[in-house]
Structure formats: C-alpha cells, structure tokens
Length: 314
Image 1 (tube, rainbow, N blue to C red):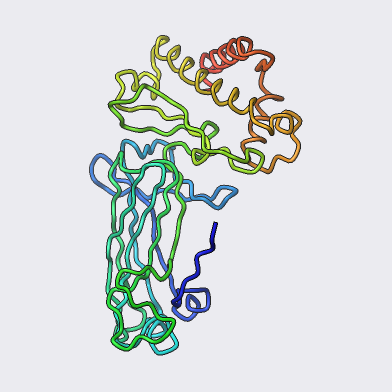
Image 2: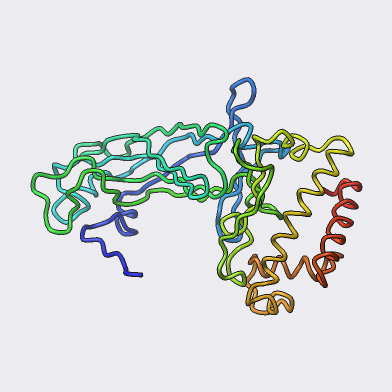
C-alpha cells in the first residue's frame, strides 16, 4: 500500500504546545426527566474509552450519548502567519467529528470560526447528543481544526482547499454496545436480518484484540425475540439466551479452530495481552468446554452456560 504524503502543513505536537488547548469535556446521557447524567470514563489496555454510570444501568441503545463542556484555545494567533498553519487572512473552523466504521456513520458539526483576530483564551462551547440506535461498536469522536477559508496569499506548504482537515485537537475512541465486555455483542436495529449473526474481520488472532472490530456477535433489536435475550426473565427467556450465546460462541470457536494459528492459541504461545488468541486460550484451559468434536463442544457449551445462568452469574 502506498504511503500518503501531505503536501501542506498539519497541526502537530509543536503547534499543540503553542496553541495551549484545554478542555473540561464530559460524556453524559439524558435521564427520563431530561436531566444530564455524567458518565464515568475509564481507559482499557488500548487506551480506548469505556463509559459507565454509578449503578451500571446506562444502556447506549436505550438512552443515547452526549458530549458537553468547553474547549479553550489559549493562543489562537499561533496558528496564523507565513510560517504557521495558515496565512494571516485565512479562516479556520473548529468542529466535532465522529466516525464509526461498524455502523457506517460519519458526521461533522461546525462549532466555531477562528481568525487571526480571535482573542486568546477563547472558549468554545460543545454540547451534542448522539441519539439512540445511531452508532455502535468503536466510535472515533474528535474535535478537529479545518480550513474554512483559504488565505489569498497562501504560501508553499499551506493548505488551500476549503474543508481540508488539518488536525485533531482532542480525540476519543469510545466503546459502545458491549464491545469492551467479555463477549463482543453489538445491538443493531435491522428488520430484514435474523435475531443474531456473527461477523469475522480478524487476520492476526494472536495480536488483534478480542473486540467487536475483529469479531462481533450482532443481536438484532428489530427481532420479536430480542427482549427475551436482552433481559431474560422467565425460564423460557433464559433458555433462549443460552441457545443464542452457545450458538454464537460455537461459531466463533470453530472458525478459530480452522485458522493457521490454532496450535499457538491452544498452547497459549505468542498471544499478546488481550488478543483474540489469549481470550480463546483462557476459554479452552479454564472453562469446562470440550473441543474434541463439534458435537462435544456444543453440548459442553450449553451445559456450562445453563449452569451459569441458573446460578445468576450471567
């Protein structure tokens, strides 16, 4: 694959230090009464952002997700000039951008316009809400700087095309819909699809993390049986939940058993921390699952999951 070379100056670490960016941004959701409830942010081993509330009751699918607070630019003048990001008479834009490959969504919301005359320590308010069912999986959310209006006297190395993204001021990779949990389950709303299905995008299971970016179990909210699996209450609901999870896990396990790295996965060799291989090795060596034949695997999965569900462990 050819490397992409930018022919114009981008926002870099040196410029970041001169611009002196600070924020007090928080993720939140709206309660039933419309009041904002702030979410806790924690980072996983890949520095991806996991969100939760105090009693772990927040569900993005039902409640949505918002970002609120202020962005402060300490020295806006540092971006303008003959040797800087853009010419003195150019205009820069600040915007909120999000990208989710798994939900095929991308968007940009303009927030402010910055010129060479904008005072230092300018405060830019941010308040945006992603409604429920809009995004899922891994979502890249960032505050970006882009060229809104080019300088009449742009010099070599300065962008000239309006709309060109010049850099990211702040960035998060937010995990939604269970992507950071033990089983990478993603809730979707697809009336033309079955109750559940599995998608494989991995190529290096010894390295790639066990997340919905590489292996995903899709659970369809549009299906009539969805409520029984999402919140199983009756014994029949629990049985359906076990059948769903056992079927999906068996599909994942058998797919990996056929890959070239299966021997390393079985032995726990060359598996990076948090990788698909490490997680599957844990399943194989710790849980009472029989990998000898597909029939034995199917039986042992169901017995184990039924036991866990009855004991209230799942």
